[in-house]
Image (cartoon, rainbow, N blue to C red; front, side, top):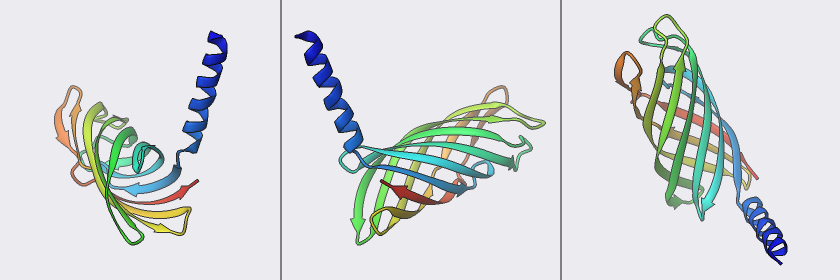
Length: 155
């Protein structure tokens, strides 16, 4: 009987997970310099969603060089206006710089943005993701200039 209950619970969890909308997209941004980002959004509670992103950094203004970064942000949908959605939320980020002054940089980020829903499956977004990071061995820094534009596909 326990095995049957476990199988039913697992099947129900899979159905619920697959029923939630998902989005895959790209973003061009100004994180510590300039970069491109691949992002995945998974709607978890009504209209709120988890945004997971991987970023390829093409150099920085402070000679840390290029690198990679990952971030996770829990965005709350804060409103709608026609085909536009507005969202904001907190998150975390990890960056690894590989240049002359390379370092590891964990930090906290916030996100505020809007997306224009073009039909049922496509969206164009504009958001600002400022952050505060600890550049391990080099002190504190910020990324207040992280403005990005993205293109998303929802299924």
